View 1 (cartoon, rainbow, N blue to C red):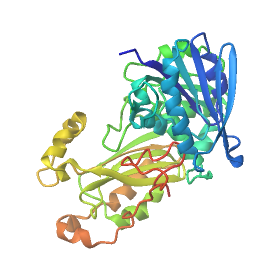
View 2 (view 1 turned 180 degrees about the vertical axis):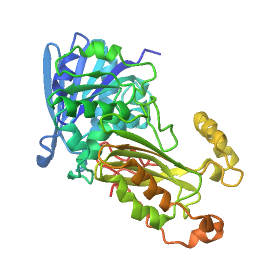
View 3 (view 1 turned 90 degrees about the vertical axis):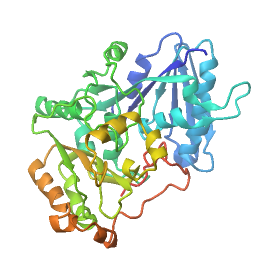
Length: 403
């Protein structure tokens, strides 16, 4: 089999994405960009750039859907570029609206069909994700990441910029804030994307930055609610007023009390992420994510304890090992595990609010009563444009399950 072509993703909202992408240009590298500036006119501009050429083509939206247009154009394009003898590296310069995690999932899982002479397969058959670089502006990123500004597609700006930074293998930061604010930003990024090397300049050596990415970097790997929440070993001590709070519990939440308490994750918090065990939903965990003032709640799939023996045997081996370490004779692997990145709130108050939302001793002793309680988390949004079994990757652009 021919070696897969290395693929580098360059993402970011206000950061120096164009400078970073074009700093990677050399003979054999092609930069691919889908420009969404003219979406209001129903078009997407696809731009291909090499060291000695630039080509632009206008694409019409596929049945009015940005995500479908990107999937139908970008994924086959990656496979075709792999076949070009003149291309030995591809750089995807992502539009600011695109979250790299969803795109990486599509590259790995969505089957591309109809390429003459080629087997039907995902784009990952021909390309391998070498790195995701996220670019950000030190003067604006933290306010963006902790605000509640809404975009036109049911996401908030905070959800986009936090997701882009969290998924990064390396970070390019345009300096601009004063020393104290840059120190706070550094403390946040060390906990949000632990292990990711940082370049605090928009015109530095990007290839050297790539060489500094550790072997343990995710390189496009997708996390879910059952993945280790402290991947990359982030610092747990406070720094510049930034705290990383771990919250775990071996009894479920009361659904209404959790719903009432969840606002503590939307004030003074950069990011909350993890799984929640809710008493009224014994078979499935809830995926809970917040970024700034934006919240997402979705099904995270069944607990191992709720699976058949065959399903459990087919589950991810790492998940099985982690579950075995905390297995309970009665409730199996059911638990709550959250990490909460705090920038302007009292971690003790957050912990107390969540603890009060757990079942009391009396409630916990009567599991037969749990199913009769009202459950405000019982319904979830689904994007009708793209049915999928993965709640985290319904769309390359639009959020899913946001509220």
